[in-house]
Amino acid sequence: MNIILLAPPAAGKGTQAKFLENEYHLNHLSTGDLLRQVAREDSELGQKVKETLSNGNLVSDEIIFQLIDHYMAETKNHQFLFDGFPRNILQAQTLDDILSERCEKIDAVFLLDVTEECLKKRITGRRLCKNCGAIYNVTEPSLKPKNESICDKCGHELYQREDDNEKSFEIRYREYKKQTEPLIEYYRKQNKLYSIDSMAKAEEVFHRITSIIEKEMIK
Image (cartoon, rainbow, N blue to C red):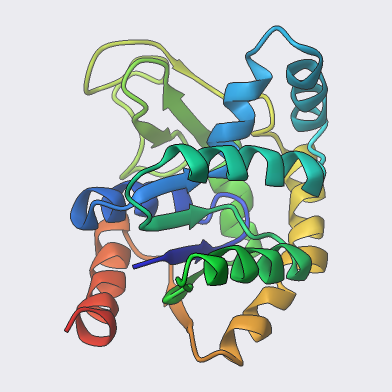
């Protein structure tokens, strides 16, 4: 089972990916996580990726393919959950080719649908735990931590990602509309697209996704 989570920035891909990873034992392939890992490395590539992310720009396809090829080659269980990839038609076609060579395919694409105003609030208010990875949002009462700088779960420090600001969001959202939104029609024509209202609570969004998986994909 291979799944893609398709959504604009801060639509909840990371949260749903963790739920799905645990529920169905999928390999969570997040290009964002891969890029941030590289950005922490003391290398020329790491510095280049760090500067690109800090400016709110997108990393080149060449680097993305390099990281994904390495990840897939190192993974034994070839059941993937793609989070943040593909982000344009060329990447989608290339991914289809890669999977076809393995006699595999994308089984479902879940589009997480959220308004632009809600996305902006989510991204500027997002906070993450440095220790356990828990995600909070200081602008949403249901996701707000008791202490704005401390994780409720493990007591470690919360932080805001460098690219979680309004300027970076506007750049990333424009790029999403231009590059990634055409994928909606690309996967709809393949009868693989499922649109999910992601304005609801994370648990409800997850329930909607799993209902489709159980009905359509698991026999």
